[in-house]
Image (cartoon, each protein chain N blue to C red):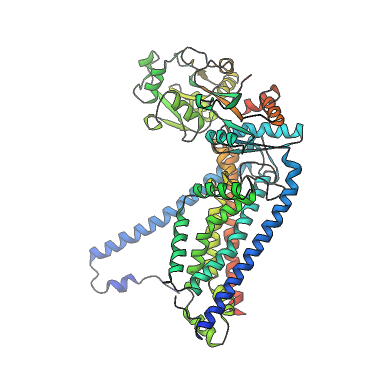
Amino acid sequence: MDRSIPWAALSGGRSSTSSRSADRLAATCVWIAAAAVSAVFFWLLSDLVRHGAGQLSWSFLVDAPSNAGRAGGIGPIVLSTAWILAIALGVSLPVGLGTAVLLAEVTSPEAIFGRLVRRSLDVLAGVPSIVFGLFGNAFFCVTLGLGFSILAGGLTLACMVLPILIRSTEEGLRAVPAEYRLGGAALGLGRFTILTRLLLPAATPGLVAGVVLGFGRAIAETAALIFTSGYVDRRPESVFDSGRALSIHIYDLAINIPGGERNAYATALVLVMILLLTNSVASWLGQRLRGQHLHS
Amino acid sequence: MIDVGNPTGGARVVKSTLITGLWSLALMALGWAMSGCGAVGADSGSTSRRAERLVITGSSTVAPLVAEIGKRFEASEGVRVDVQTGGSSRGIADARSGLADIGMASRALGAEEEDLAGFTIARDGICVIVHRDNALTELSDPQVVEIFTGRLANWQAVGGDEREITVVNKAEGRSTLELFLKHFALDNRDIAASVVIGDNEQGIKTVAGNPGAIGYVSIGAAEHAVARGVAIKLLPMSGVDASTETLSAGIFPLARPLTLVTHGKTSALAQRFINYAGSPAVYDLVRELSFVPAG
């Protein structure tokens, strides 16, 4: 379906030269803006590839770092990052989904409770990550006694990701046409059935967008993790061990280690590749899930 | 959104709220069970380990070195050394509160920190370098300030050849930059840099490739480069030669001690680690990170 605006038709018969040149100027600006955005991404990616690709190898991905990260690989760090992210998403997904359903389907948009939750989520989404880091350190590490651990880091990230996840899932649910609910009710389906068989599948794009954004924010996080999951680059034996995340490894190599730049680039390249990979897998999975539910 | 899924009135709302509530309850129970089981596992796991675990927190400049020393110590002692960063102040606070067995600070302890014991394990010193062909043999502190702030633009003004000065500065966030700025009481905005570089190697290469350049790098890295025949020259600072000897003797002015800090009675294990961190067994690790052993 062609959704572009028929500019020529809109301008009608009064297409003076000045308005046409204004159109052209606007079009050029929009194109330049879009091209600039892609250019930044490709410049960044090519910079990473140019400096980091030479270091990449299978052993870089699985070996333990040595010589303060300048030699060896990033195996334990990839593992710690995976654990941290698994905890963050494993906790925030069910909680986020539940809250989004409550906000979009159970409470009315005007209800005071819903407004309160929504407002606090929007504020939380804008809180700087270092604040989450200090909160996570005070609450998970000290008060709950988890210490510097992968679990504390994952839970801190879960708190950070929740607002993004909830808001975009909620938007996804709200975008589902009211006819779905009416149709479901007319067929005598219960609300739970309508929710799980109709609304959630239809709202999958919103959920996937939330997961992708949340995952991106979580994997790129440094400040929230330095005080929670910590700096230890040993292979973690359990979620109660401290484990260094990829982003912290990059930061440390780039700032504190003389001669660490090359491996910092290579690690950053790995991180971006993981991000690209998970994003495509998530959107593919989203498409599939949606198709399956709606056509079965 | 209107409550369209509620055609039969209040009963449905109550029912669905109940379902949502039950669902959240189930989730919370699951979460509690998981964390509960985990906590039990952690307790039984860590009681055997806790006695042998050394927690060290503090300065991000010292952390990479101590982490490497820790790995070597782990291998020889069969204990665990967990190193965490977060800055010198945090290291000192954690050592005081007992959160850490040992704190790390990239400075000497101050007068209001007499309750703590400090052990210098290495020194971080930086020196001003110029190209080997530069006729200059010495620069006074005010001259260095005038050159780096751009008030002097030609080597002739300080008794050198007729050549334009290229100021090589460090990128923001580098501890070397902080140390340099602090020593000369400068703000980074005042520096008229022609080139901004990242690490020591890059700085040395930049100066070696430009006869008019002046920069500052870690002393260890500069000496190493001179030994390899790289075309740079280390300038003395306030009349003190820039060398690893003057640095480890503690007389070179532009330097800071990398300090391990303990509070109260130091445990036997912590003391063993501190002794190990200052011993010749780890000098190679100290030099690898462009620091100079303190001993």
